[in-house]
Length: 434
Image (cartoon, rainbow, N blue to C red; front, side, top):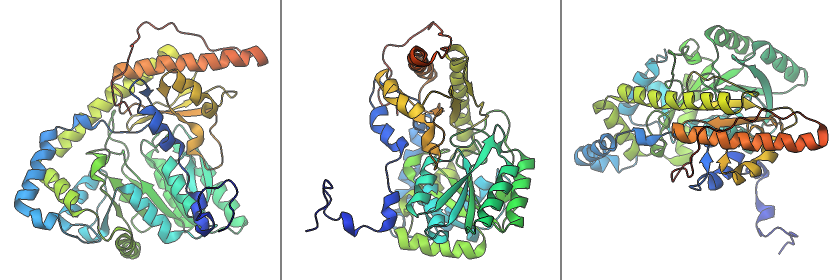
């Protein structure tokens, strides 16, 4: 047997090279800690599924088993059941997307669709352009296929078109093969910002003129708070955009149902890749979701979710104003996240153990950069905790940040933030705060 030194895995030398990219993300590592009942978690982007009435799901399940049980429990199509794809067209129509049932491929969550697209297009060493900061698990997928991620800067209005032009020119000058641009243009994860319509058109034109495919990931587009956001990029560009959608945020993530709508030739390869990976997405959950969309007021339920998340967004922004007024942060008009900028000399990753000790969790900014950036950034999720616990979490976080600055002051003469005395506190957060 080969001697692997301190490595206890006897199969270490047998793994494919690409497994070097398979590492636990900082978000995943947080869940074990953040799920402790005494910790207020502002880390994970878990939907507040308790706002979905159980009877709606129970009724749908009972009807499926009564009327279509043998079919629902059987293997299905690698493209997904036609009835569900019809409903998906109705959902996407709310964001200006037109298409046919044949254009859609149902997947095991949109994360699965993202992995399939990457698998189809990326060879080791290929380049992917992604906004900075970018969705953490997308970066994990790209790394697992040995892609080189080039980040493009964002501002308060999202991806910067000129920065995209510069990145393309630089990569082309280096002889790099650019496979696609990955973007979450509406209520982005993690920054919470939304790309205006004019920029969407400009970025599409940049991609079109350079022959670059756009991968548009849109989990949050229907969860708006202050008026509907711009239509999806796919609504005006069908040949150059693959659009990813999901029911995880507007229904429940436990169903593990998402989809992709893609140009014809790509769609055919997606179906084959889907069949190779899972044979077919779950027939059972497809039938349940289809039944729910047929019989329930799903648009009204999405509006209920909007109200829940709007209240929690407001609670977080108010608490940040009250407890950490010297910091800066984004002001999302939808979605799940606020992106906070700390003083330059604070490292959010190094500070996390101190935060957990104070019973509050967040996601460090470094999780959202492929190049190690974002050290003085953090993502705060307002989707799951109640407004009172969001406020308590920010109060605890202010204690951590001010303590960090006071420590730095001792050695570097750095002025601390103003300390705001709490006007209220909560002794113990509820159980199962993720």
